Amino acid sequence: MTLAITPSTTTAVPAVVGADLRVPLVTGERVTYANLDHAASAPCLQEVRDAVDELLPWYASVHRGAGFASQVSTRVYEQARDRIRKFVGARSSDTVVFTRNTTDSLNLLARSVPRNTAVVLFDSEHHAALLPWRGPHVQRIPAPSSSGAALAALDRALAAAPVGPRLVIVTGASNVTGELWPVAELAKVARRHGARVALDAAQLAPHRPIDARELDVDYIAFSGHKIYAPFGAGVLVGRADWLQQAQPYLVGGGATSKVTDHGDRLGVAWSAVPERHEAGSPNVVGVHALAAACEILSRHWEQTVAHEQELLARLREGLRTIPGFRELRILSDADKVGVVSFTVSGFDAGFLAAALSAEYGIGVRDGAFCAHVIVGRLVKQVGSHEERAVRASIGLGTTVEHVDRLVAALRTLVTEGPKWTYAQRDGRWVAEDDGRTLPPFLA
Image 1 (tube, rainbow, N blue to C red):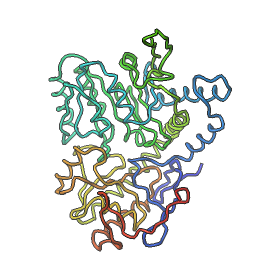
Image 2 (cartoon, one colour):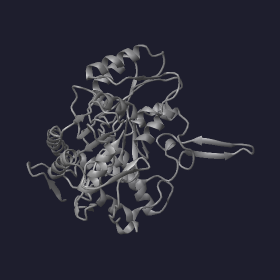
Image 3 (tube, rainbow, N blue to C red):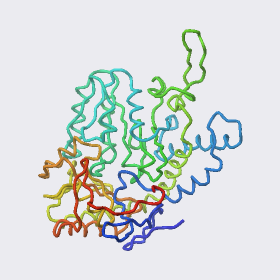
Image 4 (cartoon, rainbow, N blue to C red):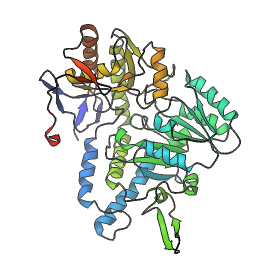
């Protein structure tokens, strides 16, 4: 395996596909792409690509084929459940349901909670965790300013919740700020009030080990595309009872154990979990890639965390030297994974992102990051009139040069202005007379 070494340490981390990708600039040059948008979608690990290539000749139908290739694919698919269960430290009784992504997983859980369940969550959540819950007993808590305030607010909300089933939704690491939430402590509060806990681990899983029993959470959701396995798979791991009692999330082949014809109606016996919520031909390639990524990261946590924290410290130190820079924060006392969201006074976030890409070959995110409520509130706190920010996010493909290039490019844009002319079209900033050529497969 090829290893990427950061110049200032001997920390070795797994290599990613596309590390040497070169992209065109509007000025006519080509540079190595600085991918600082890992929080949106992480690149594929080289070892994950190798695992997929190894499987592809054996790719066949899952569960319902008698051929040998089908038996191999079925074994791969089912073994992935145990590999992922191990990755999150799940209980042996927990079910593992494969989905498309975290959004799909949390919508599945929302469809499966018992009727009149009291659902409590903070309004700083990503839309995937914020929006699926419906009904009169959903309570959204305003984002707290500290970990202690979060615990106190949750305690008050649960004390006021109606009698019956209760569920707390909490993020592991903020999609907006990268801050690590006090999950284990929040779970203790939830337990005192008889509530279950669902963990949105989309931003946590690529950066830190997860142990469901240590955290004392009941459900965990995360996505392959965030964890260096961009092949369209996600997962919901957790207690089986609510999922078993719920109607299938989708209906079709695989979700049924038997369908009978009664003339004017069909009789249906639904499968048990996890197949109950996995109707249709499953994404065996994506599931295999997801399981492979989990195992690879599990072998490299010490290196991964050290790599990320070194680069994060360098990034934050450099950004603080930019005139008008303001970092967005929710919790004043929280540690962070490799995500920094910010505004620069007097500059539109979309313009900065467009210019960084067009003139410097740097990929960052701009906007509200599918968390409009909290981003709108945070940018007002730092004095911005726009409800948008820039997000730079670090991952295994990030290097010291990428970080330094971003800081230098931002400083130049802010102090000297852009080299190119930009205009807004359909709500997005674009470079005028952009002559950059798309790759051949898009021709």
